[in-house]
Length: 298
Image (cartoon, rainbow, N blue to C red; front, side, top):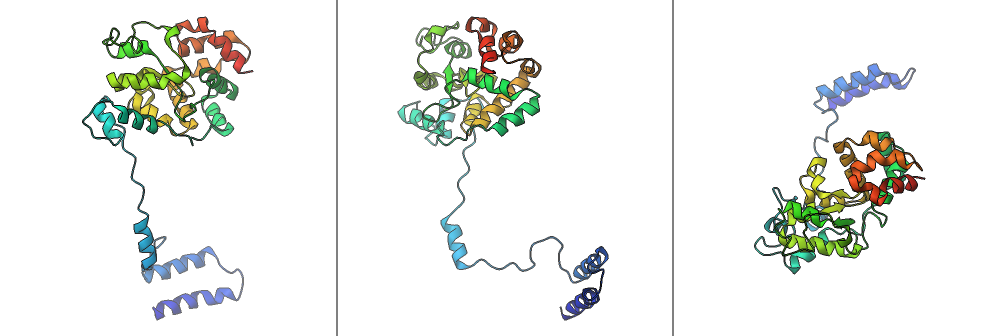
């Protein structure tokens, strides 16, 4: 080591007394000396200090938080749902399952969307910010989350009927039907109660039968949007409002609606027809979605 010190000081001393001072050539020479001395480049110290007893005790007292459970693979059933929620797999969709599910879907601290979030997505889609904000305003006027911090939902009983082969139409007419019946939606506050009641019958179909979040993406579109399932999409939406915006982008791209969205103009309902016809369905005119979107963008 003494020889290494002498080589390094002999190399540096002349350049500390006269210009041009340190140069790339000197740096290269120093690297060469360090290489020959066995000093690793850009690595950790050769002999890192051992942790102190206090550091060891602090690490033991603060173990890393456990990883969240993975969303169940395969079609969601009550056993898989209970396991995901930390309950014994065997059992029914009982009160404990319901409470655990509603608790898992709630996030009262979810971060709100920022102007930067909208600007980023608008630039990505080449669509005006006002149009994206207008879709959100029309689809979820109450907000992305309800008062308990759960993603806004609308339960569609005709979708539940379709996803279950209409097996529950006769026994559970409030949860399952063959056709769309807009007068039976019920109050906004009743939607999660319908979801949990449907979960008693078929959890996968229950999540598929809801329109989710700030942009009301139907659960049956989840896999097409890149989620493992409608349940996976629902869990993703609990994270933040930015997750809702990401879900919207996925859906618009999946449906090939970017151009139609870009054609929408504030105050011009006719320019919004192509988009809302695809987004809201052929009955868009009965609910004047094209007019609502155009006006919301003003």
